[in-house]
Length: 97
Image (tube, rainbow, N blue to C red; front, side):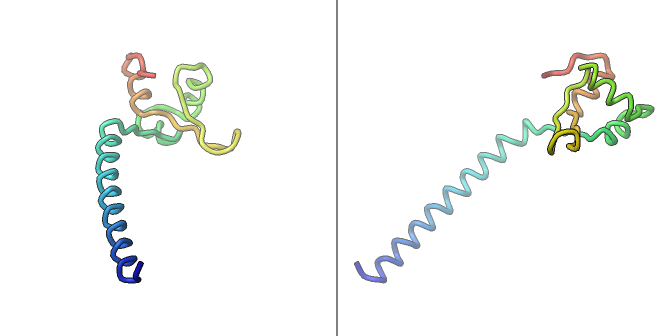
């Protein structure tokens, strides 16, 4: 096989792979966008709901009334709360979990 033929095959492979990546990227974006979730830190929760304190958010989490996701290791990780769940709780609705 000549060097020119090898280069042609490599160019074709790169072209095919590029098309596959572009197709997969656009499909993934379409899948992620409608299901996007906004999460808030405890401090951001207090900004989203006027009059809410960080202590109250932590208390609601401890009581199991608000679900959360902890990022990082152990107690040093941030607690992230789904914004929709937070607002639903304060509107008297049941959160979708």
